Image (spheres, rainbow, N blue to C red):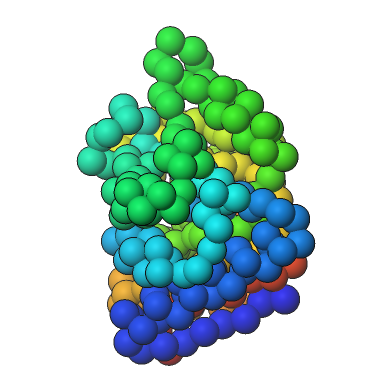
Length: 232
């Protein structure tokens, strides 16, 4: 089931998206007792993190993973995990509302060929090797995570985390959840925010364009997916 929420005011849109995620987290917790959420980076996502802190949720039963990551050290300003930590985990941890250990970083290990991907899979395996909820933010070309149109990343059959040295979007070295891992999520939330995403949104809505040319379309295969956009 796919729903599209259109709200021209970007702040109101992100507020609605944050509340929607909060409702879905409460639903998953009521059914399963715990929840895994996969998150990307980006300015819009940082705003959602800030708004999501206001939701009344037992965050200690929620675990966070990054969908994708630049291959940078922990603490690096370009790290998606650092964005999650700064805008969500640290403020809530100061209130005693979440344990910092509930946010799981991807730790780059340059000494192994997979750069730490198998080690991150082991962490996810301890939590069921699945995502309950996935938050995605489309790029201008329709990419999500580090799955890019027409690129080997979107065709990679590995079920887990993949790494690449040739990302079409700099930096070239990145980690990403594979397509099949993203599709373990029962609930998907996809953002198309800003005029720069208009072409990607048009591709998303074009039934003739396959997911390999617009990876954001992967949410169509989820049980429950909602698109939030300020475009018409």
